[in-house]
Amino acid sequence: MSDETKNENAVLSFFNLSDEYERKARFLPAVLSILVLLPVGMAFGVPVMEFVRALLAGVGATAVLAVGLSHAASAMGNRLQRKLWPDWPFDAPTNQWLLPGDPSRSIQQKEQWYAAIQRLTGLDIPEAAATEDERELTRVINDAVTALRSRLCKAPGADLLRLRNVEFGYARNLTGLRPLWVLGSILSCAGCWIAATWFGGSVLWALVASVLVLVLPVLGFTVLPGYVRQKAGFYAEAFFAAMMQLDDPESRNRDAASLGGANGRYGG
Image: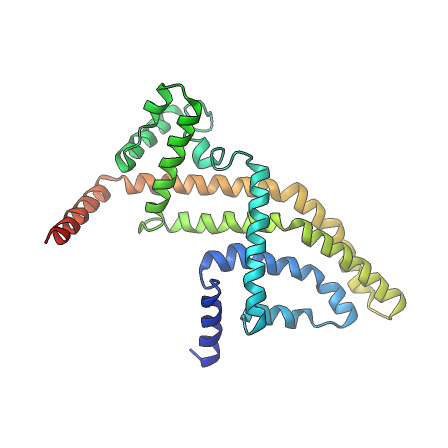
C-alpha cells in the first residue's frame, strides 16, 4: 500500500468514514446528489469531476466536507424514515411482523419466532400480548429486537443481515436527499440552457440536463419510497433468518460452552 493511500485511509478513518456503512449508506448517496450538477459544470467548464475525485479521496479540506455530507445524508434519511414509518421503531417491519395481529406472516411462523426470542432474550411476547396493554406489547417487542440486533451484528452468520442493513441505509438516505438533487437538477438545467444560449455552451449538456429534470422528480417521489420500503422488508427477512440461525441448537450449545468458559476464566 502506497504512503498516499495510507494517508487517505487514515484521514477517512479519523473522520469515521472507513466503516462500510458510513461509506456506502451515507457518503455515497451524498456524492451522487452532487453529480446532478455535472451537466452545468461541463457546460461552463467547471471541473466538477475533479472535485468529486478529491472528495472521494478524502484529502485535506475535502475530508471535512466528506464527513459533513455523510451526516447530512443520514439526517435527511432519518427525516424520510419518520415520514414512511411515523411511529418508528414500533412500526418498522422487524417490530410490526412480531405483532400477533399483523397479517404479514403466518401464526405458525410467529410462534417459532416467539419461542426463539424467549430463548435468546428471555422476553415473552405472547405473555405481553395477553395483558392487552398495546403499548407494553410494543415496548417488549422493541426491547427484544434491540437485544437481538446487538447480538446479531456480531454473529458469524449475519453477513446477509449486514448487507441488507447497508442496502436499506443507502436507499433511505438517497431518497431522503431527493429535495437536494431534484433542486440541483433544476438549477443545472437552467444553467445549461443559459450556457448554450448566451455563452456558446454545448446543447448536448442542456438536453442531458433536461432529461434529468424530468426523470429525477418522478424517480425521487414516485419510485424510490416504495424501493425504501422494499429494502426495509428485505432487512427484516434477513434479521429473522439470522435470529433463527442463532437459535439453532448447535449455535446455542456453542454459546453455552463459550459462556461457561468465560465464567470459568472470570471466576479464576
